[in-house]
Amino acid sequence: MIDLSIDGVSAASTRIFTAAGMPGDMAEQLTVWLVTSNLSGHPSHGLQRVTEYVRQIQDGTMDPAARPRVHLETGTTVVLDGQAGPGHFAADRLTRELAGKCRESQISMGGIINGRHIGRLGEWGELAADLGVLLYISLGSASGSMAATFGAAEGRLGTNPIAFGAPGLDDDSFVMDFATSAAAEGKIRVARDSGKSVPEGWIRDSDGRPTTNPNDFYDGGTMLTFGEHKGSAIAIMTTLLSVVTASAGEDIGEGASVFAFAIDPNAFGRGDETRALIQHQLERVRSAAPAQGFSDVQVPGDFERRSRAALSGGPLQLPEPTWEGFLQAADRVEVSREEIEALALA
Image 1 (spheres, rainbow, N blue to C red):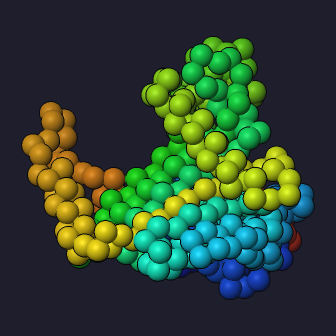
Image 2: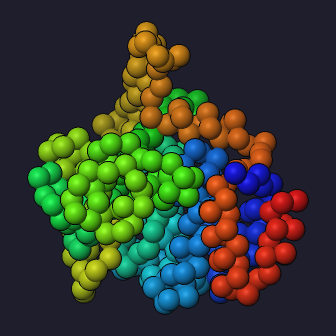
Image 3: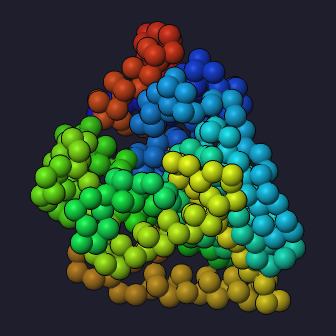
């Protein structure tokens, strides 16, 4: 593992993105979201993505300067066109737009077309909870092929992540975030870069045989959905919801689309009571006696909050292959490795 200064590696990431053609304000904010994923205990959606995004910029599949714009809008709905720009910005704007609309109409719905990777979906569940609304958000594709449905030998879905955030009291919240494949693809990448195996039931090799070697997935293998037929059904559901959003465009195309809806806690005129009941349920779950092998009972979102608290002082650690990929991204945009090392290792 390589120990990096949080401020230093943030400056290095921003430097790489700006050299790739991203406006300075976007490069800084995108880096904040990536570093937050690392600090939240999800490096799969963190700085390891710098290499991927630079590659997409250079092969023309991502426009580094594109910002989302409104494609369709009514009083209660909004569909954003991501314009092939960094997807985090579209997801951030969608969350804020839906939160604002649902305060007026109690519920709102929308999505994103022509977007790119939107990062850790829990980021948007956390943002919605901070804004005081409940949010469901998921991503799916009509043309995904990484994940196989229950009983299938071939992939027909993407990882199809889903998240939900709900505000409690005093900055507490419930934030659920998971891929409907057995794990996010990025977690398989982290295992590969760390020289580790993945758990049984995550992937098959190119011949359809179960395997725990992450390299087998990248050599033509497939991922499995979680929860057998139940998880497979939820994964398909996210695709169907994404198609609702995608149909707002002129061409559904090859990419993934985002579907989301937001609910105002005051939808039935008792917002304070609603948030108090949410908080009561969170505390009730946490108050259960822990099972053998567990020190306490958590609700979704607790892990990320604890991780950020524990890691906020640094250093931030990256596996050596991830760090090498980071340096290779610098090479691709003609930023010297020496400059990046001087920033990140400070």
